[in-house]
Image (cartoon, rainbow, N blue to C red):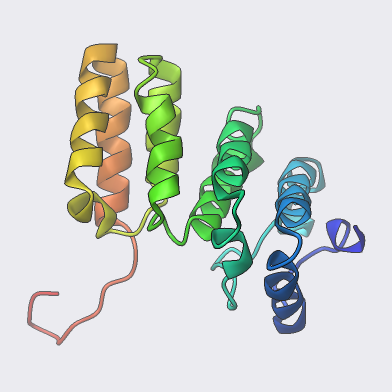
Length: 183
């Protein structure tokens, strides 16, 4: 609980502590991180909810938790809370807990909203996917196809939002290569 009020948790020792604690206390760690996101909305730029470049030591305890699906649902559902801090930090947190969208649980949890037929939930799921690494769109073809198809059924605005979110995922991130050669 003392970490909730600290300005930043982007410290090596704090990160190692959280990574180790996540192995035994998955639910309290997610609650701590979501409370930090909520607090970010009132603290402003003097406060960082989670490390903006991600945790140096992954929170693997959360990914291995038997409650992973429930943890991801809790994070996903927090995305609907009003405020800029949720729009910015919740996709990053969802990515951290889902091993950068690599877990099958993350696809299942997002699929619940996509398959609901509710345009606002489909758009929210797509905005969460916008934080996925660039290869996500190309390595999860069935998931992306379902997302685009459901968005098209939900209407033009939904389809446009989903398309923009998928483009953000596919085109975002860092790239490197030999100068003068394609990436």
